[in-house]
Image (cartoon, rainbow, N blue to C red):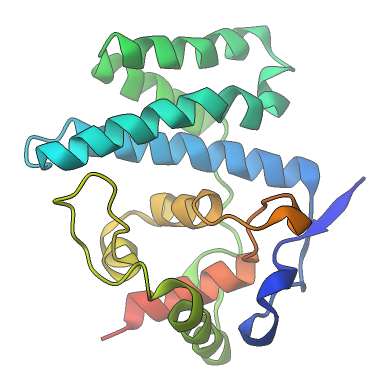
Length: 207
């Protein structure tokens, strides 16, 4: 089994490297995360109060997600023909604007392949971990994810507001799939489970 470390590059402020994650497990959690994110974006897209310009950006993001979803989720698709067909159907429903049916099928897949939240939840972070989470956030996240301007097409929304308003499942999914690494780590998320838990804890209780 090939093992990877989620996050060597962050170094000084990070508690990364404590946990090793197999490539198979990483792909599974990435697949589950992408499904949760698409469902969350779809919910925003169909919400009446969502600004029109932001909706345009959401459509672009969802369309882009479907272009890579089958590859990301190949581990579950390749082992089940019925599931493979269902995954192919998702993009077709989006193109046909059958959003309610799409939402239900996404919900079904998310329940079938749930995101394992163990070790990601803020309750597992100590006070020391939370301080580390603060340092990671301030050094790597704060610059882009400070304001919460959803009046533009592709906003970098406030992580603090997201942490306090999204479900734990969706926030963690966005932290898993939304953070990219570099070529050295095959573009994988450089944040470990402990890092995400620590950042989440800091943001939740930040005044």
